[in-house]
Image 1 (cartoon, one colour):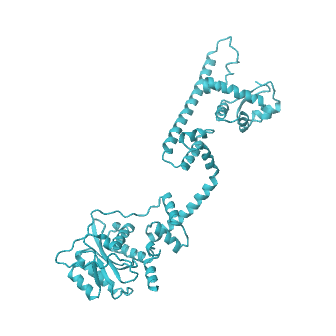
Image 2 (tube, rainbow, N blue to C red):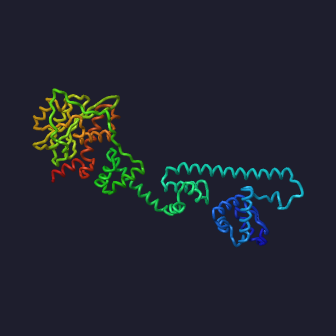
Image 3 (tube, one colour):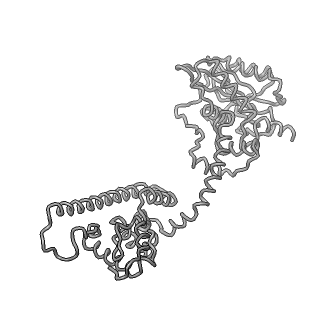
Length: 442
């Protein structure tokens, strides 16, 4: 105890500090909670005067000597008896050996104080052990910035002050990096705000007209429809960050190209994969695909697509896969007034029974259309048509249709969208209609 006495005014000031248990002109008694917090901060490297100042004590009132004596006394008591050594024992001991035996009530009070301190110490250790396990478990699979964020949340939620160094060593990150992370808080908020704005723009393009899209389509829609320019890398980063997933086509190992029957005539592959010839209305690709819907019902879609512009020129949906599905598609192509075919236009297909049929081939000759066929079992010879069907099945929820009319309505809506609003990377970021007009102008 210091010989410096407190004035009455200083006693009143100290009595208002919640860290003081009692005070007189001669002595001051601190709370056990303050002693524990003092030891935590002192052992982590803080100066005693700094700790007293942070807890509302005026150094001019307390005195430097008194602060240093408290630090030395509490440190020695902690090293000898742990947290119990910090408890105020002056209720039951004056510091001198007792000449009398303790009363039963005094013994009970002393034991209860020890039990209370031990329980507090055990609870603190349990809490710290739980926190350590959580940090180790969650920090193993996180990036460094996320580990910094985890440490910050742990310290704030559990009030583990002055344990930054320990937690950084526990999770294997740099303490200086953690403090840099704290200083960059404002910059992170600005970046997060910008990412949220970009996410809203990307979602606007992603859900435009009801069909989900990939990064290429999103980039083209933002540039053409909203005059917003983002790089593909930024779009892909934002999509990964906010889990914006576009549909991916899955390979079908059971899909096989139908074999032509012997009595049907197969024609050579005159196209030879030269799909993009830069002339609208010349290379016409066709194929048929299956569309399961409703309660185990099946529909079939026959489509004719312009190889140069990717524009769907004609299509026909039927619940039967007879020859009529292919011939009616040709009739729709011829009857479509907006379709202008060149004199040497030809139809390219696989070697399916519909296209090797004498009746179908006779119909093509009637309208002066040439014919080309893929090699047997080679889907790459008609790759653009296969690709179109893949996108169609990814983007249209035809399986939820309960009737054929409902399915037809969905397909009709998608065909309009595909030709007029779906930008394509390989068409100079234009839609099929825009690219057709571009080629005609050229």
